[in-house]
Length: 162
Image (tube, rainbow, N blue to C red):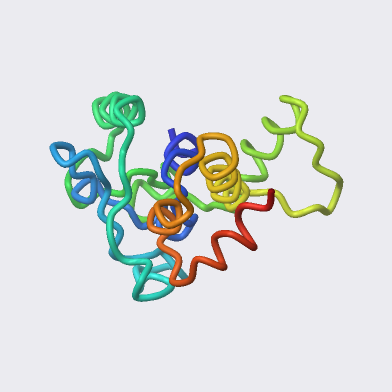
């Protein structure tokens, strides 16, 4: 669910980890982004432009509802992706998650990840941006808005190489 949420929303890992159930606006089909998890606590988003909302596709909403129904941490103030080891008091560790789950799954699926090469949740942000602009033909300004970039050049030059 974490990977799907990251891949479908292009949230930064720090924003994804800071999400509480109250941030999921079910009726509006979007997620409120107002903070990030950094250095063991909530903090402001990366930039002022980063604050806002991201759309939630109906398929993602269904998976999130299923996760909400089974997670032991389903209160409005609970993290969407809590550390079970820490009994939900903090979100899970992105480094541990990537090392134990995402990277091995990507390699098993045939993604070429060289030893020592950076590969993590941020790759999903780049992938969605590239797919939206190059394959789905979504207007770059719309993609910029979804990614919450201040400058269109960041979206086009760094995130959506043709």
